[in-house]
Length: 116
Length: 116
Picture 1 (tube, one colour):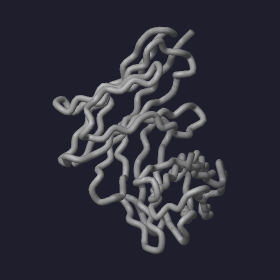
Picture 2 (cartoon, chains in turn red, cyan):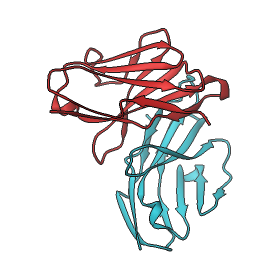
Picture 3 (cartoon, helix red, strand yellow):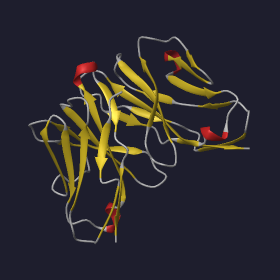
């Protein structure tokens, strides 16, 4: 089956620094990827839709200058949390749409970010 | 607007009991998908089922079964003879097909604890 990987699986960074999270589709091409955020004991909230070769579309309330998304290839999207603060600590999950199978969506394993 | 409601925040059962997780959705579209995902403590989402809005047939997969009723906008999930390994958070999600992006709107999730 289709596999989506995320790197790193967990990261601890200091307040004020930036951290980059990668989302890769390993065996299919993904023209569209999504980024979700999940706070402890809460649901997944869509942050943005990432389309290869174009600017990401952010959901209402998500700061695009803080959460930079780059979808430079059909297999890689990155989310950079700039000037991270403790309130950005969360579980970040990406998903990728396999255009070759009629739009099946596959989720990555998630990245746990802790900002100290 | 799209909305998914999972009214049960937490459910606790004893092993071998049957348990039903409720899901009620709202959408103005006539064409949509409904999903159920399992999220074990590891955090990785496990896909359970996808149902097209045009297919109201109930589905059974082993101990799992799903009841889709458009008349009540519900897509309930039943686990028969529950096991400790079923302990997880279960999310119901809705996706509109139009637009081609398949972005998911998740319910708040139901935390299921199955005790030996």
